[in-house]
Length: 178
Image (tube, rainbow, N blue to C red; front, side, top):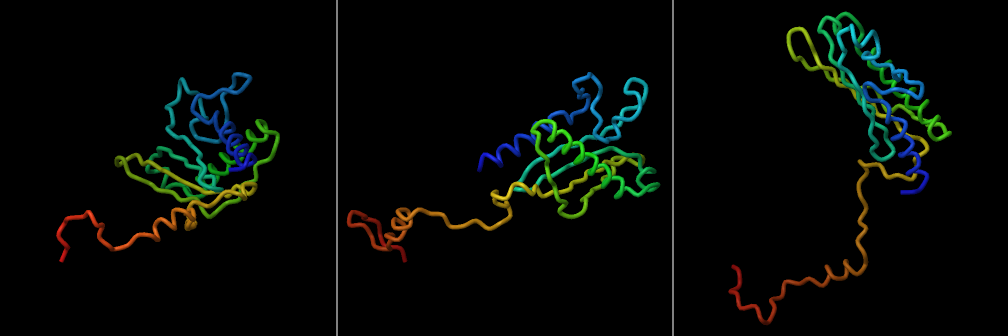
């Protein structure tokens, strides 16, 4: 892995460090990512359970989002567009923090649509988990995980394997298999 790739991954990690619930900025204000838990007063209102995380796999940045919704909210609105908007809010926050931490820009390209899964927990509530992949365009020297691997055996090991034979050793006293 090159130093450039390592710097990019470290910068993304530092940019995502403040994405947890209850994180404060340098002025002591709550950090606004674009999630539902940031709306309202945390002392008076019912807390909304949602969160996000990121991870890297090769040159792909995977953004995950999970939330708890009422069933009526799932049917009353366009859930897919709302999840797409939430993902874009998370990515824009990440890009902004990356620029603050490293001084460079983070260029991400979408790799398809948002993949969402809605699971029923009761007759009233559901869990939503969503995932969206982005290609990190400045990480070109990283191998993709899904690519087939190359045969990278050393010559000496290949020569050793080539010496194998079906001959029986002179001190082997076992009966021959039939």
